[in-house]
Length: 175
Image (cartoon, rainbow, N blue to C red; front, side):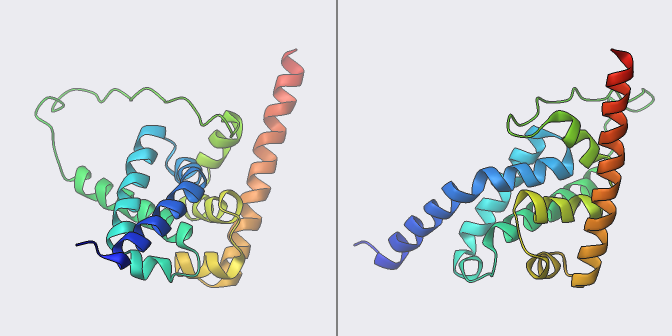
């Protein structure tokens, strides 16, 4: 016996996943700076979204819910890992992990500039620019005031403009 409500929810969720996955992945990737980690975080966030689909489907911006959940998961994972000590790494220097290939739709210089921003500015850029959310929805998603969103966005854009303009000038001089 099939449950009609579950099938309808599955179709609705599948459509939501198809239409929002790339934008959510770009937003999380811009914030965390590691493609593989971003994919894991987004997959975990979508699994949680499916588990709570009735609640998430009524959210004013379900993609923002997914991005926020992914970023919160990242913080939780980071907190858990910072307390762990690997026996292999004791007494040795940590070697940095190789960087992953950037998403083809976003310029690597832009992503590097976004990654250099403070966390809250990265989150605002991810939600406002990559997901194209309005100020009110971004504020609700990040649990901050709309004026704070505007201030972070303004500072982030100014910092990005300065970094990207200086890198273009350096390229021009080196030629």
